[in-house]
Each structure stands twice: as structure tokens, then as C-alpha cells.
Length: 434
Image 1: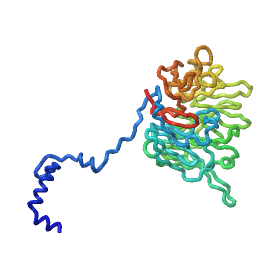
Image 2: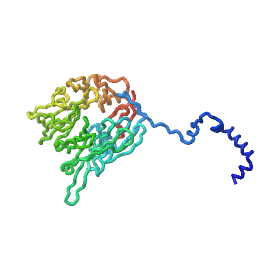
Image 3: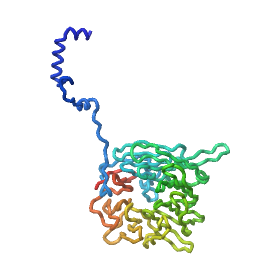
Image 4: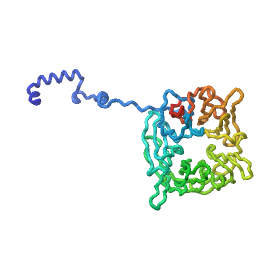
């Protein structure tokens, strides 16, 4: 019917067609050699999509925009907070790591990626097995970001069956630090029998990486002395070496330094080669020893010698050479390297800065005189962040001077893009400012 109508009313149809062309400015390719714009068509057929929000880097941040806070998932604080909404034990460690504008949150059975620019979860990945202790959220340590890779260790179990005892396995899972989470590679290592049989908590930590080797340490509950460390090749994903009874605490300068448990609360500081696991040096026996990273290639060793004298030293991780004793009065304070030039030590009523190369005391601030020592929340790239009598403050890590800009927030973890703030039990990300 329509075909007949067109044929019998051709003049009218032509007139209508011409009228429509005038109204809509249509043209044919044969009559108009100019290229036709597709912008209008694209606007109609493909509605514009707003660009994804981006965070600008500021290294180091001078302030934080608390007006644009983004709440993180509850997994970031699950099992970590006391009734006052603070991290148990007065610490600042949560089971997450920052990579650019993303937070990677570890749980006993998964790793979640969260975009702090958009406030959206980006997905999760999981190990190939059952978590050894699914209820151990409070014992999970942060994943490790190495360049463009995120390394997350998991403790897995194969339950007992018949006469076969339960087994435990370590799985090191690698994923990209940018883009949606996916498994790049995974390595499985059978764990010793004491791991599934441990009556207390068991923790696993990706301590560090260097020279193509990632180091993972598994430790038993505090005071048990149970520990084992592994070096895993990041190129072939194979197990390079195993160190029984050694808890590695620092990786750098081609070496992995840690404590070798020898019983009765005694340990021996040791260091092994990253590539081979061969022992590089061994120190003297230390009672109630502790070892912490003190900057690139350095560790801090505290404890008591066999004669009862206390030690508090900065030691080169690759050679065991004692760089210096720590300044007096700091033995009871924990110290954190700012990933620049300074080792910051802080307690309840004092903050001090030490040069990790030679142990010199750079400055010290106590609750005396006209200034008050801030409650330090974190340090990063030459800045000390915390709270003072008037609220959030920022100090120069080299001099201890107050920075002129009000930071507006006191983050517990920071990078160039975002600071993480814990307030009344709520963990939020806030953009940085310069």
C-alpha cells in the first residue's frame, strides 16, 4: 500500500521531501562534497559520559581536603578497633596499602581494591583454598606494593581427613597496582606442622622485595619464637630459599635481615642473601630482642646482652656493621623512617628525629616550655603528621619546625594522592593538597 501511495503522489512526495530538507538542513553526499559532521549524531546516539574523578598528587602533602572525604569499606577496620573507635594497642597499622589513588584491603580470604577518587569498590581476588583462620581479621597485615605489583600472602588449610592431619599452605598472590584487580601470578608453599597446630595467632607478612626476590615471613604468637621465612622469585614465581626459625624484619641492600630464635626468649640477629638465602652475617645473642627497619639498608636492634647490659643500635642490614648507638633516652620509643632522610621516634610525651646514617639526634620536642609534643599519626617524605593542642599539625621532619599551612586532618597513612583519617571508628580517605 505504501509503495503504491508513493508512486501515485510523486510530486507531492517530492515537495514534502524538499520541505523537510530545508527544515532539517539535510544534504546528499553527491550534491555537497564537504565532509559531514558526525558530532550531532554522536551526541544523540551516545550520551556523553562524565570523566572519572581524578586525584592530583602532592609530594609531600601540606594539607588535606576533609570536605571531600570518602568512607572506606568496613573490611579495612574489621576486628582492629577498640570500644573508643581507635586501633587496638594504640597502633596505626591497618590491613591495607595505598597505591596511587587506590587502597588495597587484605582479609584472611581475599584482597579488595577500592578507588579513593570515585569512592567505589573495584572488585576483589581470592586465593585458591580455604583460609586457615577465617576469623583472624585482627591479625592480618598490610599487603606489599612493589612498583606496579601488589603482593598479598594468605594462610590456607586443608582440613584433617581420616588419618591425615591438617595441612597449612602459604599462597603469595600477585596483582596489578593499577586497573581492576586480577591475579597476575600465585605461588604455593607448604608450611611446617606448627602452623596449623599453633594454639595462638599466626601472622603472615610480605616483608619486602629487592633484586627480584619477595620475602614472606610466617610467625607464631608473641613470645613463642616460632617463625619461618621464604624468598620467592618474582620472575619465575618459584621458591628460592627457606630460613627456618628466622623472622625477617627488613629487606634492602641485597639482604634480608631478621631474628633467629634460639630459645628461652633469646634471639640472634642474622642477615641472608636475597638471591640465594645464604647467611651473610650473624650477631651476638640478644635477650628479648626486637628488630625494626630504620631506613634503606638499616635496622634498629634493641634488647639485652648476656651480661645484662641493654643495647639499642643502628646496624647495616647487609654487613652487620654497627653504624652507631641510638641517642640516649629513646630506648622506650618506637621509630619510623619517613622514606626520605629521617628516622622519627615518638612516644606519649616526646618526638625526636634521628639521622639513620650516623645516629645523630637532629631535634627533640618534649612536653615542656612553650611547645607541646604532638601525637604523631604518621610520617612520610619529610613530614610529620599528627595532632597538637589546637588540632591537626604538620612538622618538618629534618628541623621539627611547624609547617605554616594548617593540614586540616591528621592521617594515619598517606601518599601523594590521599590521606587516610580514622575518626570515631570511621576510616575515610581525603584528597591531598599542596
